[in-house]
Length: 76
Image 1: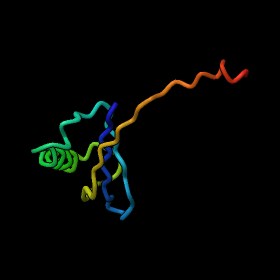
Image 2: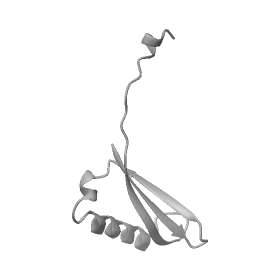
Image 3: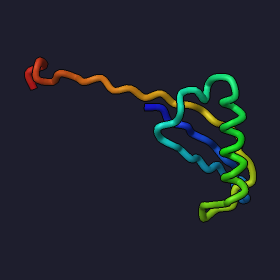
Image 4: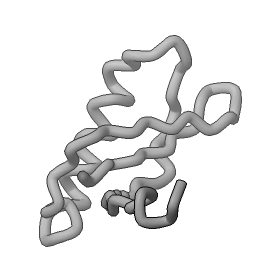
């Protein structure tokens, strides 16, 4: 699963992180940065949270994977 994490600055000068699960992996490709910027601009225009966001400072695409650990084989 990929997660898009965007970090905003609030009116108070603090960081505000927003994580969106199931992000499109093509955001790393051509046009992806423009799509993320459009989303950030929409969030800034809508102000959907209890804090006032003034800017989007960064965005990262996080790739998480799971690997099972066989604890039965360890004699636990």
